[in-house]
Amino acid sequence: MPVALMSARRRLSGFRTLPLRVLRRVGALLRPPAPTAPAAAPEPASRAFLSVDYSAEPTAGLIRIFVTASAPESTPATLVVKAPDGEALYSADIALAPQEQTRWLALHGHLLGDGVHAIRIELVDAEGALLAQADASVFAQNRGALAERVTETLKRQGAPVVIDQCGSELYDYADRHATPWFDREPEVAAAHIATLLQDGIIDAADAAALKQFVEQGFLVVEDLLGADELEALNLAIDDAVATRREGYEWGSSQRLHNLHEPYPAVRKLWLHPRVMRLLDLIFDAPARPCQSLTYVFGSQQDHHQDTIHLTPFPAGYMCGVWTALEDVQPSSGELMVYPGTHRLPRIYRQTVDLPPVVDGDWTGFGDKVVARWKQMLDEAAVTPQVYRPKAGTVLIWHENLMHAGSMREDLTRSRKSIVCHYFAEGVVGYYDSSATPGAMHLDARG
Image (tube, rainbow, N blue to C red; front, side, top):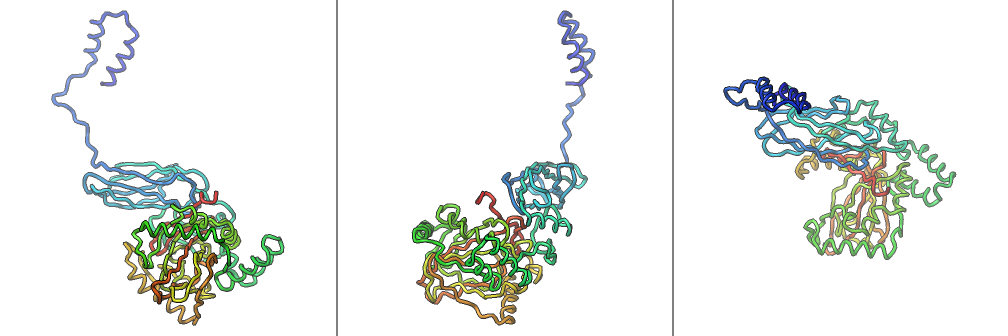
């Protein structure tokens, strides 16, 4: 309806006493002449579809969002992420197509600050015209003194708020502002342990374990699990094998991912109070679980540092926890650790000029990274220690400790074990090998 006619009718609507024929005459006078042909609404130059998938739960470290976009026809566009005040935090040229494409972006929650943040994602064409937009509301939560130090470091180095690839090149690992106590000079580490002991925070056994961690890169806790706990864990694994979870084949070195999700017994181990307490002491910050891996037989994995796979910034704030669910037998593909190798240089993709691993192709990784690890071990002349614990024993290792799975000389012998990995709350966690964001489960401990 023309605006003039609509306004006139609103004004005339109050004069109910006027004859109907008068009202019709007035309306006819105000009505514009009919066009010779219907006027079609102008079509936009391009249309696009855009959606955003994200978690509204509190998230530590990197906050990942998934952006899905498409267009009826192939169209060049720019993907833009904006802050609530309209400031552009990120932009990238993309090629829209009829088939939906999904990509991830990650936000440094440290730079956003704790709390809920509204962000807008837009698609614009070459002329800057808006094609589509979507909103997201993310919840950053990075608490404690360590998080404050990491925030200061990220700001000082000018880290971007939004990224589309994770790698060590994004972070200033030479900045020792947030280096953990156990990676500092020996006298600093010794003084830290002495203070904890003097203040009654730890006892002599804890002090010995922390000393072992500082010097050798790992610590061992015997008899952490009782018979009932071991029985429940082994029943969970037996069920996973019987139901062929992840297509498991009996006798293989295949690992099963995140059994803490379907099996309460594994989740209980994932959050075991004694393990969490030791990790809290190591990190000097709350430990946050990342994932769990379950093995029925030995892994036969090459010697490696976890650093490039589960990567913390600052360095040092990730630990692996290996739990034996049965007495480990000779020739079963035992775990091997290389004492003191946590002091060797850390190897990242950037160190050896390696692109991210894509679609499970580890060829370049083996040629560059594994070869560099072998060179380092040969030069250090470190003798590996074969690890044959009793059931219920727990091994906690430094993220940079070199370790491996030996060859399974007797293929009939199992080596049931669960490996869990943890980041310190307050750090940035990512997976350098695949250049993707890492996970830290804040809700697991409350």
